[in-house]
Length: 235
Image (cartoon, rainbow, N blue to C red; front, side, top):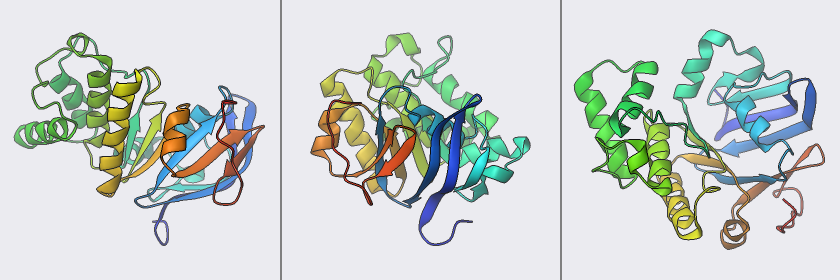
């Protein structure tokens, strides 16, 4: 496992999208319980960085450790085990439209090794209550608002009690009031001990909440711990 309190440690990495290196010399750590924003213009490498961390893109150069797994040595058979320790939140939800909320959550649970139906049902209700959707188990995704669907996605990400949530523009398609509620839910999750890495274009969040910022810019990853990062409308 990673030493100290760091649950992500990336050193001298290059992040690729296909054959193109979109970020070079990437070095950063994220500690247990930390909340970090990831910003940058469209195409600057934010999503590619997140996808590399959950092994949707290959880790080709450098050293990387996340929740105890070395990315440069990760075997295909180990990817599901890595993802059990991560929570992944997508902007476009990626819910099965022809399955109920409960069935969407059960699908993930079965895919990650759950077998006891009673425990599955109990955990499903726990995470739905956590995100404020205790009465949504039997509903279809199309019966929910965009904000409610995003809460289901967050519930799905919490199923296996992850050490960190990787969130790619989780409020990007939501109106400001709904986005604020979703962000406050992320804060609650973070306050209970789960680290958060959130890619966002939401300038209001960045100005309102003084969390650490990682910025993808001109092929580099800047860190507000070591660099002056201006929050403006250039991303």
